[in-house]
Length: 270
Ligand code: NAI
Ligand code: BGC
Image 1 (cartoon, rainbow, N blue to C red):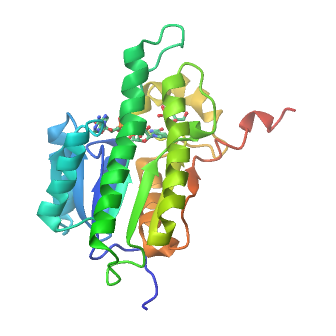
Image 2: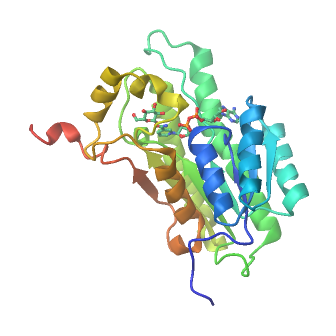
C-alpha cells in the first residue's frame, strides 16, 4: 500500500453550510487537495456558487447544492445530488450551524428547537445519509484506507458551559456523544468519525465578538495563544482528519482553539 498523503485525490467530499465561514474555507481547502466538492448552502445561493466557482478555478470539480440540513427530505436530495454529479461520497464535513442567543428565561421554544434541529438533528441526518452511502458502496481502497470519513463541526462549547447560549451549548454537547457513538458503531466498517471543536474563529457567526476593538480585546483574554482563529486554521485540521494521514484516528475531538480550553483564568489565579 502506498504511504498516506495529505491529499484527497479521487475523493468526493460534501461540506454543509459551505457558503461562508468555516464551511467555505474547508470546501476550498478540500478542493485544493484534489477532492471533488459538493458545496451545500441554505439561503445564500450567491455565496455557495462563488465557493464552488473558486474551487473550479483551482482545477477541481465542484457543485453548489441548496438544502436545509434540518429537513430529512432535503438532506436525502443533497446526497442524491452528490451521487448524481460525482457517483458517490467519501468525505462528509457536517459543518452547518447557527446561534440564536437568549438568556434562558427569555429563550423561546422556537429558538431552542431551531438550534437543536440545525446543529444536532441536521448533523445526524447528514451523518446517517453519508453512512448509508459508504455502506452501499463499500471499501474504495484505491481512494482511501477508510471506507468513509466524517468530520463533525462541534465547538469548545461541547465542553465549556455557555451562559446565554444554552440551546447552542446543548447542541454541541449532543454532537460530541453523537459523534463518539457513531464512531463506535461503524469503526468495524472502517468508517472514521471525528469532530473539530473550534474556539473563537473570525466568521459571521461571532462578528459581534471581534468587530470592535473593545470586543476583540475582551475576546483575546480567553485565548492564551493571543490571536483570534482564522477559518483556514479549522480547514487545515479538517483536511488532516479527512485524509489517510489520520487513518488510526476515530471518535476523537480535535480542539482547534488557541488554548481556549486551557482555563486561561488560571494563568495568574487559583
Ligand atoms: P457561519 O455563520 O459563517 O456559517 C454557518 C453556515 O451554516 C452558514 O453558511 C449558514 O448558511 C449555514 N446554515 C445555517 N443553517 C443551515 C441549515 N439549516 N442548512 C444548511 N446550512 C445552514 O459561521 P461559522 O463560524 O463558519 O460556523 C460554522 C460551524 O462552525 C457551525 O456549526 C458553528 O457552530 C461552528 N463553530 C464556529 C466557531 C466560530 O468561532 N466561528 C467556533 C466553534 C464552532
Ligand atoms: C461560537 C462562537 C464563539 C466561539 C468561542 C463558537 O462555538 O459559535 O460564537 O466565539 O464558540 O466561544
